[in-house]
View: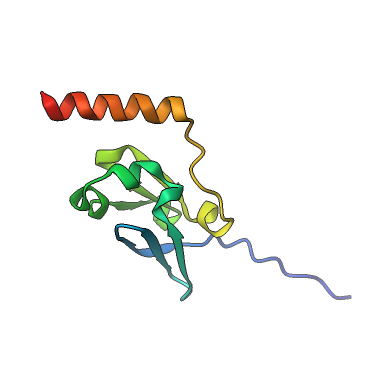
Amino acid sequence: MNSLAINTDRPIASRVYVTEDTLTVDLEDGRTIAVPIEWFPRLVYATPDERGDWRLIGRGEGIHWPALDEDISVAGLLAGIPSRESQQSLKRWLAARAASESA
């Protein structure tokens, strides 16, 4: 009798690079994912220092940017899922950001 082994391992990030136009994530299994940062508007509006201030969460299953309050899952990147943040939520975040910068 044959059985199908299903790999339930989740993709794990090891490194993250953010440029002016691309979010690139290296995975522990050797793959690299690259997506446009336009998929994640908070990264678009971030400074280079804020883009570089990330940490892995969930043992590498996600990426968190503390200054941006942005979390991105590696599985979501692999599935090609951009940010699902509403325009209303993004506008509130931008307004709060502008208010804190002018204070």
